[in-house]
Length: 297
View 1: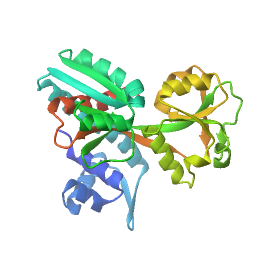
View 2 (view 1 turned 90 degrees about the vertical axis):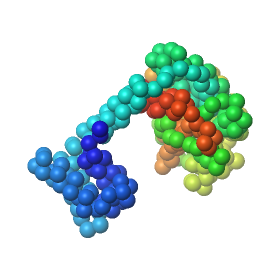
View 3 (view 1 turned 120 degrees about the vertical axis):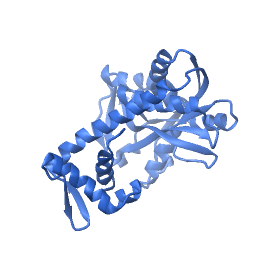
View 4 (view 1 turned 60 degrees about the vertical axis):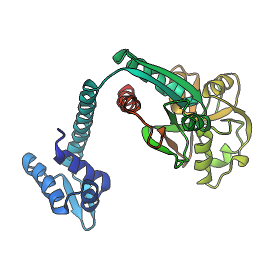
């Protein structure tokens, strides 16, 4: 039911190319151009400016983009809701999730899901990313959610949401609002345990800036964001953890974020299932989780 012209416009903007949009949507480049012209003719404005091999949005195009994204998202939500209404909503689902996701992302989603579908029984097993992958592989959970970077061929991965790791310390700790990498290396630092997706993402990002974990002043490794937060509140140490884990502490002035100059540590939360094993109930929960998480932000 989605207006295909919106999809064409969004594909052109996303790919910054009529040719790439043509390949993505499997229609000809003249057809791409025609759909854009139809929108421009309808509103009597120019949306996209072409300059040799590049394209850019006009001011009117920027306005149209903001509405097009909202409308496209609403179409997706409508399609999702209608699919839910036409499916059998009974069964049992065992989820596995790495620590950050199980503590801060999934609980509110599960609460809304169980209220919406009371005849679907949910349970959740928590562990670090390596442990959840093992649980999925051994089929002790139906499917899982992980935060690591390494994708193994045995699994199918799908993006649930984006996340950012940030440097934090106690709000009472008198410190600068921004530091450079040389200063980072001197801070007494708490990090997650080996096998944690959080630690793997941190290690990979630092590697891209020619920094090794051994270059840092790591004084302790702890097995959860909760234990790290409790430690920080009573110390003058620092930690790099998910921003999803500290919303309440930031709001209540218990912890504070310190920017690391020229370094942004981003990652994605993924669902994970053994290739060929994800069932309709698992897919139902994942699609619901994507929409619910976006609405909760």
